[in-house]
Length: 410
Image (cartoon, rainbow, N blue to C red; front, side):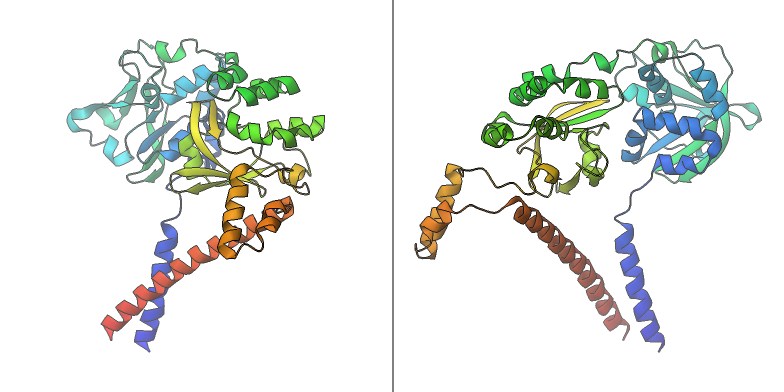
């Protein structure tokens, strides 16, 4: 009886272990949400996209300041890029929990901040000195800073996951002349010109001719990710594009933009549904980001596209080249495929027909092909089958491991 209990407990433990390996290491937004007095700091980590940068790093320290300290910073009316530089000084590329802060070798050390990592900091101004001073206090001060305001000191630990992330409170904001220097506004960047110069001339021309370039440009300030079909992909798609209404064309183009900055690393680590610039009410106009090894795929239920290159990836703008036009099911669900198949498709159909005996060769070559509904259903079935296969593989592995250990116990 005891062996049976041990056996089932072992299975549960192995299953729990396999499940635990798939969870994210940390989420700074969720961690700070437990502490309402840091809501403003938390909000600006999200607004400046620093939250995503924190979450993707394995070893990090976040020096949070409360709402009072943030209000003092915001009273200076800095533009958002400057606030981002200042908050970047509060994020260290090393782990400093409460215990480590009071055990600093020789009482002082210097660490690099995300401000240094961005390349915006000149010289050593992106580094921060940490000093264990008398009375058990720990002081923080940016290197090369002539700031003469209140000293920033350690207050308490908020959240710690040794040795991945430490979220601590400091008494005042960290700043420097370099961090406060005027930063270039990302809104000045011409998105369509950038795409035209980097191999997406056709897509850029479509955006301009359809009159939706302002939507893309106006979205850059708050964060924007664009998936730009290559000129080759759009050349094959042009006949179907011409058949769309004016509103349909606008929706299709806006469907390729996501109103949030996503680096390639962020896309690889966060799968799931995303809203687009075309999203509106009952008409979802969303698609799914899904990793396939190192590849990032975009699934719309009608077509699956793969990211093949990067035009720009600098917060708050990322533009990636893709090998297929993203077709939203809201526009193409009931449409037939292109009237004439590609030559490669004809060749493949004839080859398959010949291999089968040749009787069906003409029928396969001239047939209408699958509808968009069929393609959507096939994608969904394949997705479900993949999930069942992966789930079964994990279960089989856990069960086999348990049987081996059970045999050893017996």
